[in-house]
Amino acid sequence: MFIEKPFADINLVVQDEKIPAHRAFLIKNKYFQNLQTELMKDEISVPDISLKNFKGKISLSSSQSQLLLAILEFIYCDTVNLDEELAMELVGLADTFLLPKLKEACESYLSLNLRAENVLKISKRAEAVSAKKLEENVIAFLIKDFEKLSKTIELKSLSPELFVKLIMKLRK
Image 1 (cartoon, rainbow, N blue to C red):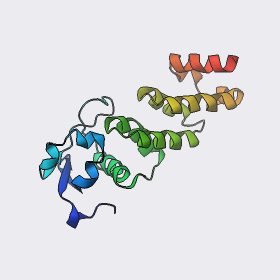
Image 2: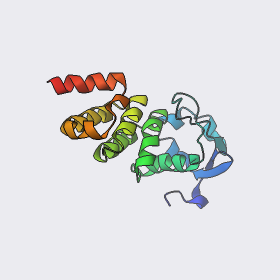
Image 3: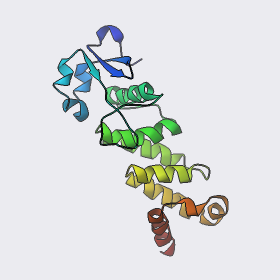
């Protein structure tokens, strides 16, 4: 694992679970730089990470520690192993943790894995977290096979804003 417990000098606490970390790595990130006085303590409680309220504090649900570990992996290694579910969650959390490269990585992963079965869910997530590049890729995906997709997915499930963007692109 990227975090070696014997050398960790701080614990991040998420729902009573302690995750060892290193101040030297955390301080590279602007989110943790803003917590500079907290970094002097031996332990930091990572507040609520609400996926609905990205500007609030951070507390994660059942997979909260997994999300924080993925964020730490990105801070430490500049990479993270993504799957669709993780990318869907991290694409919004990247803004909270001031990690634009992580947001780009999640948007790219989701864009490359667009399918008829997930395009509506991904389009809603892209809009919710202001993932503009992902929104553009969703529209491009819908345009590419519009005739086929319009028969297999509920286009009325698209948000009105995204639907208008789609129609405008189709008219060009």
